[in-house]
Length: 115
Length: 110
Image 1 (cartoon, one colour):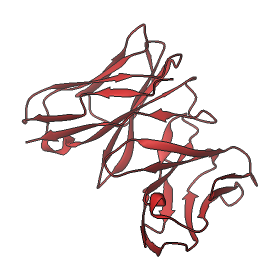
Image 2 (tube, chains in turn yellow, green):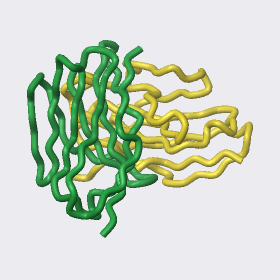
Image 3 (tube, one colour):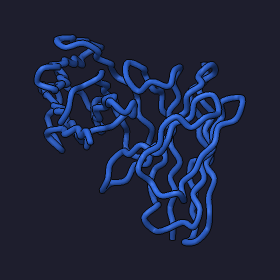
Image 4 (cartoon, one colour):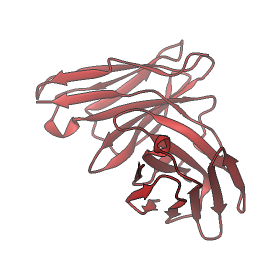
């Protein structure tokens, strides 16, 4: 069974630009969650999608948005990039939308660098 | 909001030594997960603990959950260089979001 895939793996952008990251979950998984990981803040929850609906959202500005398609693939978009958006963006897929008692499988991440 | 604190933040051990990593929650735990991460890569699932007193083992790694103390521990026996990485605990919260601890960086030298 193929794991969670994320594209691209590496991305370099400049301030003010926008970026779109993609995540393909494990086949059969309907929940996709996105996380931002930085050395200073650690791993922080961005949002979660289940069956094309956003089920949960973290404390991030509106510049961070996402969506999920009918095949469960998900994209996240960051507009008007800031230097502080440089991070490793991880997506995770799971069978259900519950955070408890529900194993999440993580992708390799997309390393975003904002110059 | 709920927070998970891990200790120690960093650990350097000699190969063959045992070690323990702790994860303490500021609120009631609704399931506890342990993940391992190689630098700059994704998280690898290690174990999930659901009930107080539960203990699980996989190869040389054992995790325990003390629900009353809102704490979990991860113990590695006879550490090997392959155990090196960042260990993260994660927990479900009452808002149904998965939150993560601050991480413990483990280095194992020969």
